[in-house]
Length: 496
Ligand code: NAP
Image (cartoon, rainbow, N blue to C red):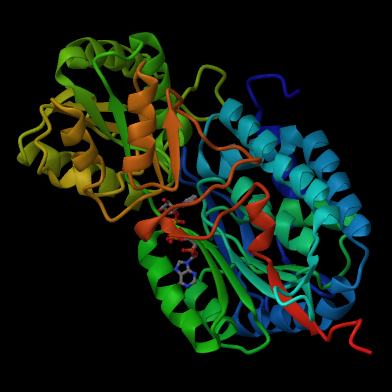
């Protein structure tokens, strides 16, 4: 384990050890025109590294490699793919300190949270190492008793994986691991803000035995220009995207050209409901976990706190005290419990949402300001008296801001919870199990936390309904996203 505090020498030597080039079939290479882009430390605005900046020609080379490697990779024994994944799990876990520090440097979260992400992200490698040998089909007799039906699962083929910056490791392993297990080749385009974690992961996967060409990694500052031609290329068969609903909508439209199989993990606007009969302490613990993991920069972050009138005063007081105790500092500092936001644009968006809420009638009970000095820090913020119509309730905040809305009845709470185009996750705290089940059935979301502020789990199907996405990641469902069903009709074997 790293001894706190992390020294700048340790940071420099880690950055120097991580690949800075593109990974293509021939190994690590510079971009087609030799260009690079800078990766910034959001805690101080300083340049961490210059990374090769993939051009459209590099994207084309990556897809060509994936296409060429696909037949041999699909023919490997499931156990062979499982062993690569299992070894990758061991290696990522053994390098937990490096991955954790790298994520803290690239995107700002405290080291303790980065370590949590390493454990979570590595778990997808282990989970899908266990799923790879369990891909199966079925053999059955047609209802009329004559023909036989054989149903096979086949890898869908070369897959483009596009990931966001907020969970640089876990969002990559949640796609790469099931693709490897299924026998798909891949091109990974990580977020421009956090390419280093993806590059270290790729190096680790190669050490675990992943053959050349099965995975290419193409960081780029021109996402659309590089991935656009791949999405309309007939060699690509699958697009898996995690990111904003706005970009996801565009990519779904682009995927129509080749009728790609698509998986979309998009934005959220999670309601967090607290009923009068809730256990106050566990509701506050859950609220802090649901709001403040990743400083609120999570698709599953609680975005709207809907609190029943009878408990609203006690909840608001206890929750605000806990928010006030959050220590904002660079993620490498031992006492940090919240780092900076990822960049200035994100900070300005958060500040504008808070300003809009104030104009709409909300009261600032805590925080509400950007912090002076270097880095993109913003205060943990609690807004009360938020009207049901406030604009902030319709937007994904992606920052440490908690708007609290008071409601009276269960029906009113359900109506408010569903008043959004998103449907990723919802949370509810109540001691009444029947109420909990009514809410789980009536709130439109892909996931539901009952007296739990964290639902993410490698064994659980992660994903949303409505405009939060298509498909599921993790769990037994996760591998299906990379498999096609093939049916073979067989004539009656007893027909003579
Ligand atoms: P984003 O702006 O949509 O970017 C996501 C990824 O898409 C990045 O790699 C980005 O590249 C790339 N991209 C952007 N424009 C593109 C285009 N025209 N063509 C191809 N790729 C393009 O989202 P973000 O700000 O990184 O991430 C935050 C969002 O992700 C939030 O809405 C959050 O809710 C969502 N998210 C969802 C889940 C989930 O599982 N549902 C999990 C995590 C995050 P660049 O980095 O170069 O812009």
